[in-house]
Length: 376
Ligand SMILES: [Zn+2]
Image (tube, rainbow, N blue to C red; front, side, top):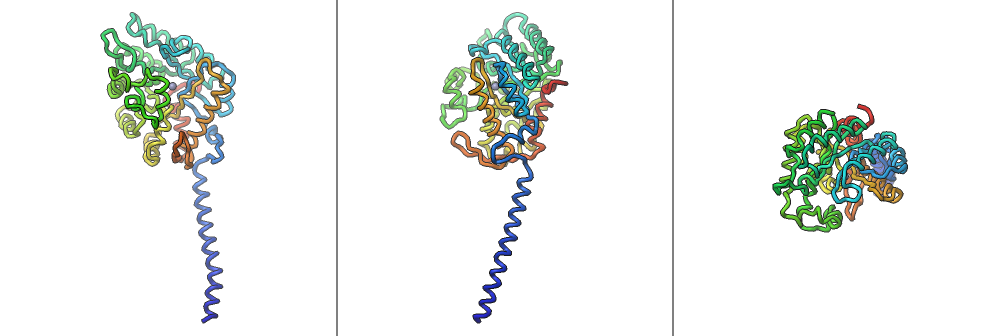
């Protein structure tokens, strides 16, 4: 009895480590095949990002400083440098100086900062508006601009002489849209705002800080202004009326709270794509499986962008490290399975496969904004 017990005990000393070794070997092989899928590292480097020749389709570099080019070269990065007229915004109140600076940055960056030009929408009731705008835009096209920006003042701020708000599908823009399409350029459209703009102030909202600083754009305080639905309905008519015009909707097309809403628009409007600028946190806030499925199904329609900015008067030495930080955080979100800590929350990385990352970070920008690489 005692002998057989000893034998059993001896056998268990052999069997248990064998099982442990098998389990360990299995775990190791599982984790190595798991790691073999995406490139990036937990150490937080951007080598996988740079390997894709990434394009940030939404940036605003309005200081012609060698530090911008240095950053772009170091990260093997290109940006679409977007001009935007912000009335009463310091240094942004008319198109001409913005277009001039963006053209300079295009050249000094060796073409890495592609140029998205713009026009002065506030003149829309002055005689000859469309012809004048087309002339300005065509000049920018001749000098290298590859896209044209329209901004949220259309729909939210600019009023017609009859007291109604100017909408993006107003006939006054028809010949401008036709001209952009005829030149095979792309319309970059920031219309409306996040839904939180129309809701009571909420410190948990990703946009709380912005509306605290910009109460003039906080529509909850301006109930007389058009609803988000009204503004986006006009945007949708613009898409339907101009099927040959490629439109990139900035900031997830202002449909940031639910990717299903974006999906419905993609199904309806083949000429429509969106950028992720300043709204990646909204993707992080949705279930990762749902966002992954969306980015898989619509892998040709979503373009990486940040809204990274270098405003006139800003200090590049202070601002550009923040660009780098955002590229890193968002790269970790899209490409790894890590937990991303951001603004007091933890979000699970999507671990998108390499072919989808390549489209998100490079191919889709080239497809939706022909000429962004400096040749057509
Ligand atoms: Zn922007």
